Length: 240
Image 1 (cartoon, helix red, strand yellow):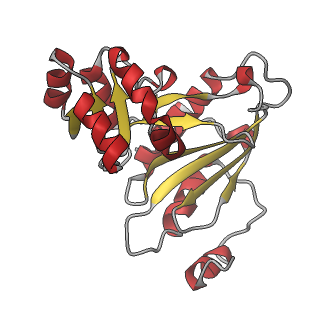
Image 2 (tube, rainbow, N blue to C red; image 1 turned 120 degrees about the vertical axis):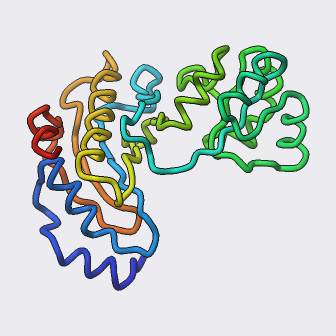
């Protein structure tokens, strides 16, 4: 599928086959982000796992030190004190039976992330066909089913993001915006890389990090040398 004139021009501005250090790739992605909006910078990592096997699915959340640069609309399924806690923490939508009905009967999906208390999961579970395909279904593994809704709301609105391997073993994680400073993007990349290494399944065999690319929303993928994906303290200090 044609990508457009700007995309084609961007492809000519760098060696598509070269392997870069993370810092170089981040700078390239920033320079190739020429859209009229503030493009998201994304890290894509192909892992040596078989996501068809339950014990090799890599899934969780990671807190980005510099945030995402995006306003996250959070919906919380909670009642009583937990609902009030969610409101005080800054949740955009809070409800219990009423919110379940809005989603189920009205197709209400005006939010980017859903959090639920365990006692309401029996009702929220009925929304699986609506929330599941959109990646909005609360799940204990990602910290979106919790009794501490205030903390969860604060963290997700402040820069905590979910990640999960797709059917090919790829993980795509936003690491900021093109307008971010170099250091901020490197801080976020390091947090993601460290988290993926921490989450390595015991059942994964062979090379774990197979390939890495960095790209902006409308830009081409820039290859990163998998052996140079680790952001060191020295690199961070040099970019300060």
